Length: 269
Image (tube, rainbow, N blue to C red; front, top):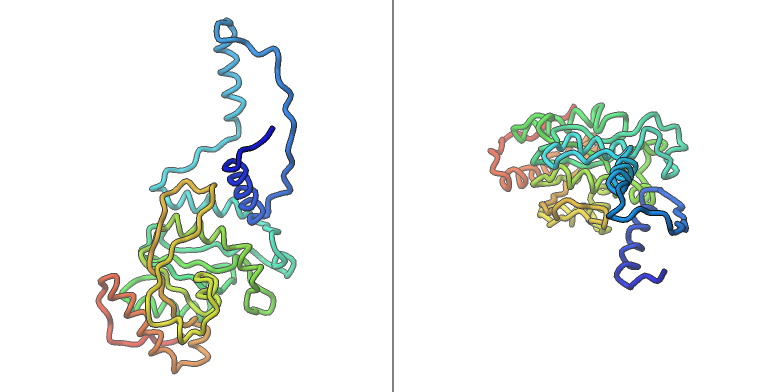
């Protein structure tokens, strides 16, 4: 069977998507033509069609409605699985997958790198809570996710291939939550989301138009939001002098969202 160019291109993109998710290899299977299929005027035709439909739909779970974002996020978590082996981080004593936490309908989404069972726990997590509180919000009112879903050994910076492996799942999370603003916490999150290698000094202080990449597997509507960059809470704990700069970044986000800005710089843990 010869495929036309458009079909061949679509198939190539779909196979690429599967490879990004770690699914494969996929093989082509020859299906012999059946010579005993009933015709429309055959009395057994309706029964055959019904049986075929029942067989084809068995084990298929209908996708949750678009408004049920918590269920859609759970679908993504299930796709990742409890014991993901897609990259080398699985071999470094990982205890669990770190998916994300917060309000699935949040207008504000924070993305960083802090994988210890839940996104942003410990002192860095407490400082992030204080930053969110200074914006007049509670942690439960935002959504927090990570660039990678597993903690790198020695808490090192995630490597490029590790970030790229998790990226399709993070992009799906963003498209489900559909925030108005994403705040990238730290250089690793900012560089991977924006696809640039600039310094934090040049990345901070302004908004970027951000649209999560899509594949042929995605059926949701195209989506775009604003993205701002600020310092990672762990960096602020090491250099508290930069808290005022981080607060300027958050105030920029607050003005965009119409939130009342506090005069107080967030305190550390």
